[in-house]
Length: 180
Image 1 (cartoon, rainbow, N blue to C red):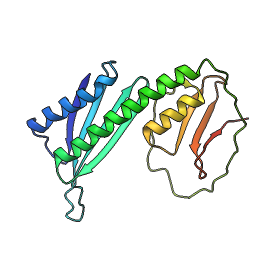
Image 2 (cartoon, helix red, strand yellow):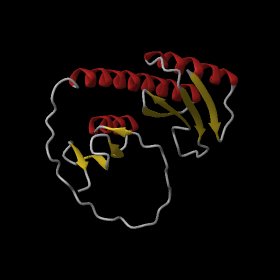
Image 3 (cartoon, rainbow, N blue to C red):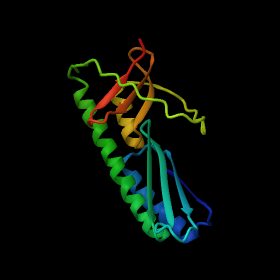
Image 4 (cartoon, one colour):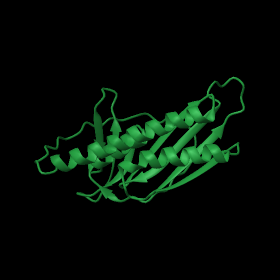
C-alpha cells in the first residue's frame, strides 16, 4: 500500500507524516490490494473555528472509493479520528462485499422504484467532475454511494447498459432513476 501524505495551508512535519503512514497502512491491512491512499492535512487559520485541523483520507479499494474526513484542534487528534473512521469504513466495505457474494446466488426481486421530481434550485455550474464509469449493478452503486457519503450516485447499469441514478429518499429508502 502506497500512502501519500501532504498538507494544504501547512507543512506536515516528518513525525506526523510517519505516524500517518503507519496508521493508514495498519488500517489498510484489511484489503491487501496495494492501492494508493491519499492523506491530506488542512489547517484553518480562522480563530472562530474549533476544529483547526482537518485530515481527509481518500483511497480506491476493491473498485470502490472510500473517503473519510475528520477534524480536531490538533493534527494528531484529527489523524487519529480519521484513521479510526478509515478502518471502520474498510471493515464495513469488506463485510458488505462478502455479504453481497453470499446473496448473489439467491434470486433478487426487483421492484419498480418510485420516481420523484425535484425542483431546480437555480444558479450556475460551479464545478465539473469527470470520472471513469465502469458498469455496475444497482446494488454496487448503492454501496459506492454510501462509501462516498453522498446523497445520490450516477452510474452505468451493467444489465441494461444505460445511465442510472440511485439516491436516498426522504423516507430513508433508496430510489433508482432509470431512463425509458
